[in-house]
Length: 133
Image 1 (tube, rainbow, N blue to C red):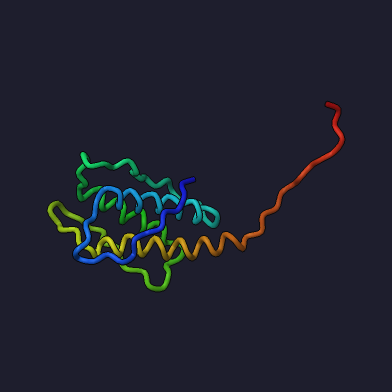
Image 2 (image 1 turned 90 degrees about the vertical axis):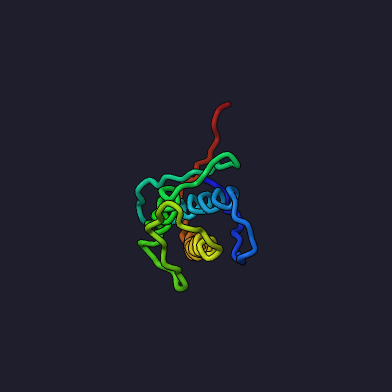
C-alpha cells in the first residue's frame, strides 16, 4: 500500500499546480481506498501516479479523479466535504479552489478512516513450540 503524503491545504491564487500535486492526490486516494477497504469492499479504482512534465492532463482524467473521491465518500461523507466537480469539459479552467477541494476532501476521509482503523482490534494466532531443527 502507498504511504500517505501530507497534502497542501493552503492553496492560493498565486500558487502553481503541477504534475507532482496530482500525483500526490492520486497517491493519497489510493491510501484512503486501502483504509475504506477495512470496512466495505470497493470496486477497483484506477489511479495514475507517474505524471511528469511531458504529460498533459485532460478533462477525462480530472473526471476520473473526482469520481474516485465520490466513490470513497459513499460510506461516510465527512462534515466539511466540498462537493465534487463531476463534469469537467475540455478547456475548463482549473483554479486554486479545485486544488483545495481535491486535497481537503481526501484529508477529511483520511483523518476519519485512519482514526477508525486504529481502533479496530486485530486478532490472530501465534504458534510457538519446540521444533526439531
